[in-house]
Length: 222
Ligand SMILES: Nc1ccn([C@@H]2O[C@H](COP(=O)(O)OP(=O)(O)OP(=O)(O)O)[C@@H](O)[C@H]2O)c(=O)n1
Ligand SMILES: C[C@](O)(CO)[C@H](O)COP(=O)(O)O
Image (cartoon, rainbow, N blue to C red; front, side):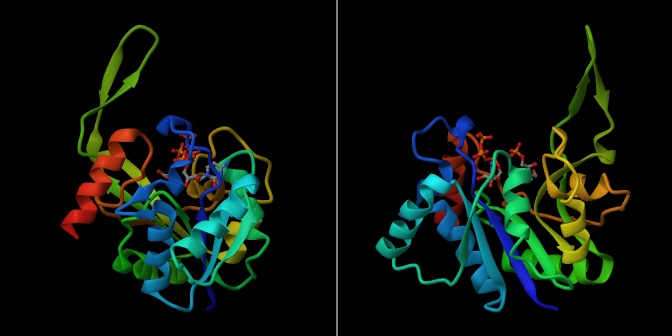
Protein backbone atom coordinates (compact mmCIF):
# COMPACT_ATOMS: atom_id res chain seq x y z
CA UNK A 1 0.00 0.00 0.00
CA UNK A 2 1.21 3.50 -0.80
CA UNK A 3 2.32 5.46 2.29
CA UNK A 4 1.77 9.12 3.02
CA UNK A 5 2.76 11.30 5.97
CA UNK A 6 0.93 14.54 6.68
CA UNK A 7 3.22 16.66 8.84
CA UNK A 8 1.09 19.41 10.34
CA UNK A 9 2.89 22.72 10.81
CA UNK A 10 0.09 25.20 10.13
CA UNK A 11 -0.08 26.67 13.63
CA UNK A 12 1.18 29.98 14.98
CA UNK A 13 2.62 28.71 18.28
CA UNK A 14 0.76 31.05 20.67
CA UNK A 15 1.88 29.14 23.78
CA UNK A 16 5.53 29.45 22.74
CA UNK A 17 5.07 33.22 22.75
CA UNK A 18 7.66 34.01 20.05
CA UNK A 19 7.05 36.03 16.89
CA UNK A 20 8.47 33.17 14.76
CA UNK A 21 6.16 30.10 14.79
CA UNK A 22 7.85 27.32 16.83
CA UNK A 23 8.11 24.90 13.87
CA UNK A 24 10.75 27.25 12.39
CA UNK A 25 12.81 27.74 15.58
CA UNK A 26 16.32 26.36 15.35
CA UNK A 27 17.16 23.14 17.15
CA UNK A 28 20.90 22.42 16.91
CA UNK A 29 21.01 24.99 14.11
CA UNK A 30 18.27 23.36 12.01
CA UNK A 31 14.54 24.31 12.02
CA UNK A 32 12.40 21.98 14.18
CA UNK A 33 10.19 21.09 11.20
CA UNK A 34 13.21 20.02 9.13
CA UNK A 35 14.21 17.49 11.81
CA UNK A 36 10.68 16.03 11.69
CA UNK A 37 10.60 15.90 7.88
CA UNK A 38 13.99 14.14 7.84
CA UNK A 39 12.86 11.57 10.43
CA UNK A 40 10.03 10.39 8.14
CA UNK A 41 12.21 10.47 5.02
CA UNK A 42 14.98 8.45 6.68
CA UNK A 43 12.46 5.90 8.06
CA UNK A 44 11.29 5.06 4.53
CA UNK A 45 12.25 6.97 1.36
CA UNK A 46 8.98 5.88 -0.28
CA UNK A 47 6.73 7.83 2.11
CA UNK A 48 5.05 10.68 0.22
CA UNK A 49 5.48 13.71 2.46
CA UNK A 50 2.90 16.50 2.77
CA UNK A 51 3.50 19.51 5.02
CA UNK A 52 0.77 21.95 6.10
CA UNK A 53 1.99 25.50 6.70
CA UNK A 54 0.37 28.87 7.43
CA UNK A 55 -0.19 30.18 3.88
CA UNK A 56 1.82 33.34 4.64
CA UNK A 57 4.85 31.21 5.67
CA UNK A 58 5.07 28.92 2.61
CA UNK A 59 7.64 31.11 0.83
CA UNK A 60 9.64 31.49 4.05
CA UNK A 61 9.74 27.67 4.40
CA UNK A 62 10.97 27.36 0.80
CA UNK A 63 13.73 29.88 1.58
CA UNK A 64 14.66 27.92 4.72
CA UNK A 65 14.89 24.72 2.66
CA UNK A 66 17.26 26.42 0.20
CA UNK A 67 19.34 27.97 2.98
CA UNK A 68 19.69 24.61 4.78
CA UNK A 69 20.16 22.59 1.54
CA UNK A 70 17.10 20.54 2.40
CA UNK A 71 16.19 18.62 -0.76
CA UNK A 72 13.84 16.07 0.85
CA UNK A 73 10.93 15.78 -1.63
CA UNK A 74 7.63 17.02 -0.18
CA UNK A 75 4.60 19.06 -1.08
CA UNK A 76 3.31 22.04 0.89
CA UNK A 77 -0.36 22.71 1.56
CA UNK A 78 -1.94 25.78 3.17
CA UNK A 79 -3.08 25.12 6.72
CA UNK A 80 -6.51 26.04 8.07
CA UNK A 81 -7.99 27.76 11.08
CA UNK A 82 -7.35 24.78 13.42
CA UNK A 83 -5.31 21.56 13.28
CA UNK A 84 -8.50 19.80 12.08
CA UNK A 85 -8.80 22.15 9.10
CA UNK A 86 -5.10 21.79 8.24
CA UNK A 87 -5.35 17.97 8.22
CA UNK A 88 -8.52 18.16 6.13
CA UNK A 89 -6.77 20.33 3.51
CA UNK A 90 -3.84 17.89 3.32
CA UNK A 91 -6.09 14.82 2.99
CA UNK A 92 -7.19 16.18 -0.40
CA UNK A 93 -3.75 15.07 -1.67
CA UNK A 94 -4.06 11.51 -0.29
CA UNK A 95 -5.36 8.63 -2.47
CA UNK A 96 -7.82 5.96 -1.33
CA UNK A 97 -6.51 2.47 -0.43
CA UNK A 98 -3.32 3.88 1.08
CA UNK A 99 -1.89 4.41 4.55
CA UNK A 100 -1.52 7.88 6.04
CA UNK A 101 0.42 8.90 9.14
CA UNK A 102 -0.52 12.27 10.61
CA UNK A 103 2.26 13.77 12.71
CA UNK A 104 2.86 17.09 14.49
CA UNK A 105 5.69 19.01 12.83
CA UNK A 106 6.78 19.99 16.33
CA UNK A 107 7.51 16.41 17.46
CA UNK A 108 11.01 16.12 15.98
CA UNK A 109 12.19 13.15 18.07
CA UNK A 110 9.93 10.57 16.48
CA UNK A 111 11.91 7.35 16.02
CA UNK A 112 12.26 5.31 12.84
CA UNK A 113 10.97 2.25 14.72
CA UNK A 114 7.79 4.01 15.82
CA UNK A 115 7.09 5.33 12.32
CA UNK A 116 7.49 1.87 10.76
CA UNK A 117 5.44 0.18 13.50
CA UNK A 118 2.69 2.71 13.14
CA UNK A 119 2.20 1.94 9.41
CA UNK A 120 2.32 -1.82 10.10
CA UNK A 121 -0.32 -1.67 12.83
CA UNK A 122 -2.57 0.63 10.77
CA UNK A 123 -2.28 -1.70 7.78
CA UNK A 124 -3.47 -4.59 9.93
CA UNK A 125 -6.00 -2.90 12.27
CA UNK A 126 -7.12 0.23 10.40
CA UNK A 127 -5.52 2.68 12.85
CA UNK A 128 -2.49 3.12 15.10
CA UNK A 129 -2.63 5.94 17.63
CA UNK A 130 0.58 6.56 19.56
CA UNK A 131 0.22 6.92 23.34
CA UNK A 132 2.20 6.68 26.58
CA UNK A 133 1.31 5.83 30.18
CA UNK A 134 0.77 8.78 32.51
CA UNK A 135 3.77 9.53 34.72
CA UNK A 136 2.01 12.05 36.95
CA UNK A 137 -1.01 11.71 39.19
CA UNK A 138 -4.03 13.22 37.47
CA UNK A 139 -7.07 15.02 38.95
CA UNK A 140 -10.42 15.89 37.48
CA UNK A 141 -11.76 19.30 38.36
CA UNK A 142 -15.29 19.61 39.75
CA UNK A 143 -17.28 22.73 40.61
CA UNK A 144 -15.62 23.36 44.00
CA UNK A 145 -13.19 20.46 44.51
CA UNK A 146 -11.28 17.90 42.48
CA UNK A 147 -10.78 14.14 42.57
CA UNK A 148 -7.92 11.80 41.77
CA UNK A 149 -8.23 9.64 38.64
CA UNK A 150 -6.90 6.09 38.24
CA UNK A 151 -3.90 6.83 36.03
CA UNK A 152 -3.49 3.18 35.06
CA UNK A 153 -6.66 3.69 32.97
CA UNK A 154 -5.36 6.86 31.26
CA UNK A 155 -2.98 7.47 28.36
CA UNK A 156 -1.32 10.64 27.07
CA UNK A 157 -1.83 10.80 23.32
CA UNK A 158 0.95 11.57 20.86
CA UNK A 159 1.44 11.41 17.12
CA UNK A 160 1.90 9.75 14.66
CA UNK A 161 -1.71 8.73 14.34
CA UNK A 162 -1.81 6.46 11.32
CA UNK A 163 -4.87 5.24 9.43
CA UNK A 164 -6.07 3.45 6.35
CA UNK A 165 -6.77 6.39 4.09
CA UNK A 166 -10.42 5.56 3.29
CA UNK A 167 -11.22 5.62 7.03
CA UNK A 168 -9.53 8.93 7.82
CA UNK A 169 -10.69 10.68 4.64
CA UNK A 170 -14.33 9.83 5.32
CA UNK A 171 -13.99 10.81 9.02
CA UNK A 172 -12.73 14.25 7.99
CA UNK A 173 -15.91 14.80 5.92
CA UNK A 174 -17.81 15.56 9.15
CA UNK A 175 -18.19 19.08 10.58
CA UNK A 176 -15.57 20.39 13.01
CA UNK A 177 -16.19 20.11 16.75
CA UNK A 178 -14.11 21.83 19.49
CA UNK A 179 -13.24 18.45 21.05
CA UNK A 180 -11.38 17.34 17.89
CA UNK A 181 -7.88 17.99 19.28
CA UNK A 182 -6.41 15.00 17.43
CA UNK A 183 -7.20 12.60 14.58
CA UNK A 184 -8.27 9.69 16.79
CA UNK A 185 -11.14 11.77 18.18
CA UNK A 186 -12.30 12.60 14.63
CA UNK A 187 -12.33 8.92 13.63
CA UNK A 188 -14.00 7.82 16.86
CA UNK A 189 -16.83 10.32 16.33
CA UNK A 190 -17.79 8.29 13.24
CA UNK A 191 -18.31 5.19 15.43
CA UNK A 192 -15.02 3.40 14.71
CA UNK A 193 -12.80 2.10 17.50
CA UNK A 194 -9.14 3.05 17.33
CA UNK A 195 -6.05 0.96 18.13
CA UNK A 196 -3.44 2.35 20.53
CA UNK A 197 0.28 1.90 19.92
CA UNK A 198 2.98 2.31 22.60
CA UNK A 199 4.81 5.61 22.09
CA UNK A 200 7.90 7.13 23.68
CA UNK A 201 8.53 9.77 26.35
CA UNK A 202 11.16 11.22 24.02
CA UNK A 203 8.52 11.98 21.41
CA UNK A 204 7.75 15.35 23.00
CA UNK A 205 5.59 18.04 21.43
CA UNK A 206 7.38 21.36 21.52
CA UNK A 207 4.69 23.61 22.96
CA UNK A 208 6.10 26.04 25.55
CA UNK A 209 9.59 27.63 25.92
CA UNK A 210 10.99 25.03 28.37
CA UNK A 211 10.30 22.31 25.77
CA UNK A 212 13.04 23.88 23.59
CA UNK A 213 15.56 23.37 26.42
CA UNK A 214 14.53 19.72 26.76
CA UNK A 215 14.73 19.33 22.97
CA UNK A 216 18.28 20.77 22.84
CA UNK A 217 19.29 18.33 25.61
CA UNK A 218 17.77 15.35 23.72
CA UNK A 219 19.60 16.40 20.56
CA UNK A 220 22.95 16.58 22.37
CA UNK A 221 22.37 13.13 23.86
CA UNK A 222 21.63 11.57 20.42
N1 LIG B 1 -4.26 25.59 12.40
C1 LIG B 1 -3.33 24.72 12.78
C2 LIG B 1 -2.96 24.58 14.15
C3 LIG B 1 -1.96 23.68 14.47
N2 LIG B 1 -1.34 22.96 13.50
C4 LIG B 1 -0.21 22.10 13.85
O1 LIG B 1 -0.60 21.10 14.77
C5 LIG B 1 0.50 20.73 15.60
C6 LIG B 1 0.10 20.67 17.07
O2 LIG B 1 -0.48 21.90 17.46
P1 LIG B 1 0.04 22.87 18.59
O3 LIG B 1 1.18 22.33 19.33
O4 LIG B 1 -1.15 23.33 19.34
O5 LIG B 1 0.62 24.08 17.69
P2 LIG B 1 0.14 25.58 17.57
O6 LIG B 1 -1.29 25.63 17.19
O7 LIG B 1 1.11 26.22 16.65
O8 LIG B 1 0.40 26.11 19.05
P3 LIG B 1 -0.55 26.98 19.99
O9 LIG B 1 -1.76 26.12 20.27
O10 LIG B 1 0.28 27.22 21.21
O11 LIG B 1 -0.89 28.23 19.24
C7 LIG B 1 1.61 21.78 15.35
O12 LIG B 1 2.65 21.17 14.61
C8 LIG B 1 0.90 22.85 14.59
O13 LIG B 1 1.72 23.58 13.69
C9 LIG B 1 -1.73 23.07 12.17
O14 LIG B 1 -1.18 22.41 11.29
N3 LIG B 1 -2.72 23.97 11.84
C1 LIG C 1 -2.40 15.73 18.36
C2 LIG C 1 -1.76 15.97 19.68
O1 LIG C 1 -0.39 16.26 19.54
C3 LIG C 1 -1.85 14.72 20.53
O2 LIG C 1 -1.25 14.99 21.77
C4 LIG C 1 -2.43 17.09 20.42
O3 LIG C 1 -3.74 16.70 20.68
C5 LIG C 1 -2.36 18.40 19.76
O4 LIG C 1 -3.06 19.28 20.61
P1 LIG C 1 -2.80 20.81 20.76
O5 LIG C 1 -3.98 21.31 21.50
O6 LIG C 1 -2.77 21.33 19.37
O7 LIG C 1 -1.56 20.99 21.52
